[in-house]
Length: 257
Length: 253
Ligand SMILES: Nc1ncnc2c1ncn2[C@@H]1O[C@H](COP(=O)(O)OP(=O)(O)OP(=O)(O)O)[C@@H](O)[C@H]1O
Ligand SMILES: [Mg+2]
Image (cartoon, rainbow over all chains, first blue to last red; front, side):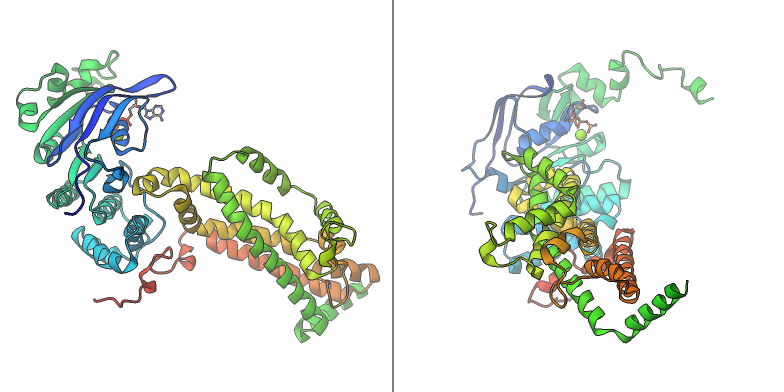
């Protein structure tokens, strides 16, 4: 590797607000090189906003975000896969090619890279099809192929397996593992606790815009530090916080009748 | 009644024999309007796209200006172009008045705002969808602009056809700046106006039929492009101009 790592990424008291509403609150943390981090938390906790802040798509309203190893070229060395895959209205092949062309990879160099990532993601046979025709799961794989082609140092993934069926989830996890073993630092969100156990070296727990916990994965599942995290891992958070539950525990039979 | 059917028969025989006058007039019409629409596209599409994604001073003013230009009465445009190009006007030295170029300029001014406004709409919608992804890939706004035009191509073609429809059907402006000179600046619409007033219904009807056919063809084309599943018409196999056919190296498989 000629280029040095842009990691670690350090957040110092980062907050993000829209219209006076604080959606990410005083987050301080550090992402070291060489591990994978899974960001978890209930819907609306601010996970997607958090990833966007880290990736640089949003600017913090206050606080500091710093790539400590950087020489200024941080944007070129990181990539993101969004919760909803965005497909360019072009062929599958051209979708990957476009990402490479933006990065300034020459045409001659693009071809073998595209072929390789499409093959590795099992999309070779779709290469001439408009990307918008792919199924949701295939689109998610194409989004992964597209960032894989860029060989980023850091890859942000926002719920890459949400609404995928188990085989597709398995496929996507394998792709993520392959990208990781090629040397990419993974930072991703997930709702699937099984997946967190399979993929995470480190877990971050977000709740209502606050970072409540950043610990090693085993420790998180053995004895989470905050009681909210414990409730979340046991799937109890639903009742924990609803002030007016739609279905108070115990009356589900009456509702279904 | 008899006059009417005679005129129809005469009109059809003109069409079938490809009457020289008729062909000349139709050819000039198509040349003028196509040139105007293509030049309008070259200016209007990047302008519309820039208005959709850019943030620069005067953007709002430009949007308002273009939207109001869309509703300009053609005769007013004709008058303004006439004043600019007339011998005593600021561009009089060019000697363009009563030439096809003057007609192209008038039509361009009429069509450009339509193309720019429609492009802005198309690109705005697409940008809302693409923005984060393109920024994440590291594309600047300048880099995004051609991407958005490329990916909005099927809707943009519809915008072009709408512009062409307005250009080819336009009478007042080309009459004023072209002068409807025989064998020089006589196009379909101005000929129809003239022939009807002269009482030569056959040529007028023949040209009218041609105009209707062109309108139907244009509408048919935009319908084909607009209907789902037909977008293949516009899509090269590799799609989007980044296709592999352009690569010199042959496929290995
Ligand atoms: N542009 C915005 N304007 C106002 N509120 C916003 C905006 N974007 C996000 N929010 C709010 O910020 C909160 C966090 O949003 P975010 O998308 O980060 O949640 P999340 O943790 O990713 O949830 P999910 O698990 O459902 O994806 C939500 O309550 C959301 O409504
Ligand atoms: Mg989210």
